[in-house]
Image 1 (tube, rainbow, N blue to C red):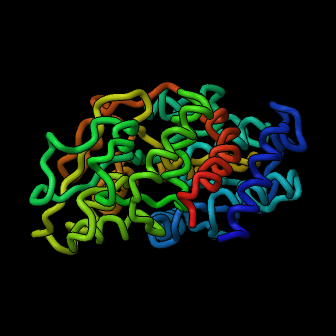
Image 2: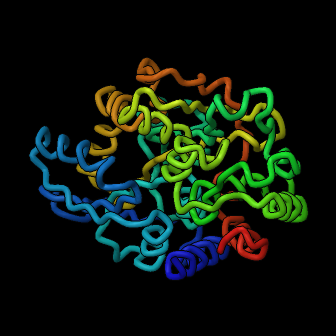
Length: 342
């Protein structure tokens, strides 16, 4: 844990300084950097989630894909340290903030225009050097038998209300929670984030290591609700269809709802890397995200496999992901200082 946090801080410090390269000088020799019979990918996405798609690509293309799996922030930090010595041609990230940091450091190449056009503009880099693969919305998972929709918090600020004392769960060491707080920081500033975190701590939330354990806690009646990513509810329901849990998207307060994304960026000019990126954005792969991981497919025409609130109806603030990434280090410090991380 300490090592991960320390590495994340290194990443963010480097990102804030602009990295080793000035913006716009990504690795681009004009020639394929490695044999087109083989490609190296760094993946911050869990192997269980992304490996089936990569294996399908290997079977269809005949190419060999070497994948280094790891924590998104750690891999992004590694890429900044490796610079043009990296063996990786493609980076798959669990969140947009890490992609924003690499973009800000000038380490990503432009994504082909026809690929960029496959997803809405809010799910791709404004500079055209990274693209979203699937959407992950922050939500409140709750048990309707224990708390009604009317009584749920309508905004993050509502979590400071004493009536919720001891009734909800958070995962402060989880990257999704930290990114959510960083978005709040960008929108409202550090002083107000400190007030929010202090209010949460005063309400004695239950702390969990990750989103899935929050859903499990709601299902066994340990807490009434918790802050999670939306798809963990559907993963739980796929194993127990009778599970009495639901998702709620907070409708008030800018930044209370937030759609993060998993995405990818190219690090070297490589035909194989571009082919793999096209594969991940194909209709078939988007259907995989919809049916196997229960995330939001981002390509038009591919529908979610479960009943989800349309992306267009989720209030997501328009904040630059590079700025969110640059705030993550300070946000993490505030989370630690608040006492929420124990």
